[in-house]
Picture (cartoon, rainbow, N blue to C red):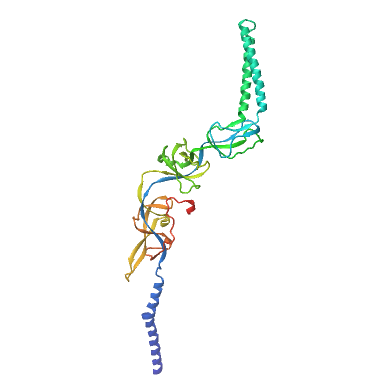
Length: 376
């Protein structure tokens, strides 16, 4: 009996020793490792300094270029092309002869009509003298006058038909590509060549009706075209349409741009910028640095602190900001970020307050106020 009691007491002691050892030594060690494994590891982000820049509000629109005067030249009458007096792409002055159509039969008919008109004139003059001598009646003279006017009208009509066969430039400008050849028959209305007056050139664009109060004639505009990256073409607003489009509630605007080098051509796509208001100094950030949420816009600032060992560490601090207008890849910040503070520009989706940071700025998001398509 005593032997069994001793064995039971030893077993209980062993069990209690194991429990005590677990609670006092092993359990805290595992707990410490678990908590350490749950710690927030450093997150790799890119950063940038918030800077104060001159900020000019502007309206941006999409437009297209149009010649001040432009037309596809054609003929009013049909005929065979007998001569072409221009080269494709040439600059011509108003009144320059461009194309001749065969007109020999028309000239012959004109000479016949002129002879008839001359005879009618002679008859009318003779009967006028005879009327004074009362050799003919007034009715005969009136008939002669009518015949003369009719003959003269037929001469003028035939002359106009001949003139139609000599196509001239109605205004000065640049010709396009020739669409006809000598010996070809052209029917009335067939396009012969395009003629465009290129200096100055118009840019037509539309703006929402709420922008009407911010624009006026004479206001400066800047046009950008993909064909000439980095080149700005400046001009002024020439006219505003007298009505609003009821379908879109937009107003059509036309600006005039000097084009002495003829770089701009009708039909080109262009981006139009109109500066409005006064220049302001605002803190600007790359647009990627702001996280937009239903409850507000936020950014992560980078704070430099010392850890328990006295080593410098970087930590994220989330702050709410009031964002203003955008300009290219930039956004203005009205409140929440000060000049010179460092903000996270990429990688903020994996951050929370106090997250340790590892900064890598080898790749930076674009921060260009006037980005070009080639830079995207």
